[in-house]
Amino acid sequence: MGDVLDWLQGNVSWDSFRFVSLKCTLAATLYGLWQERNSRIFCAKMKDHTQVATDIANGIRTFLSSKRNVKQSSQNRSICEIWGLPHRIMQSI
Image 1 (cartoon, rainbow, N blue to C red):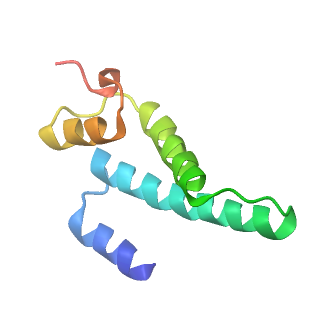
Image 2 (spheres, one colour):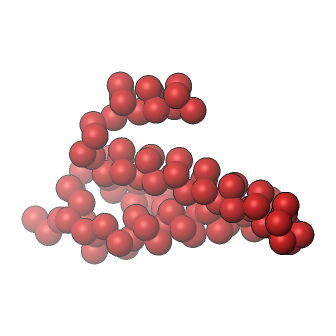
């Protein structure tokens, strides 16, 4: 975990949309896996791996869709395309 955070710190600007999306992806993945683990241990409920991944991706997409005034750049447009985010989150020029 420390290696991932060290890489983020050295390679990504802290105030960039890329950093926000990477941080959100890491946090949502860890939380989703922890939530599934607890569900299996304490509630005897189990999802298959595709449903866990879908739930995590939907959470990330929902969070990133709530952002506004994201700087117009090719990198940010690429992130929006990858996640299927609406163009309304980008700054108006």
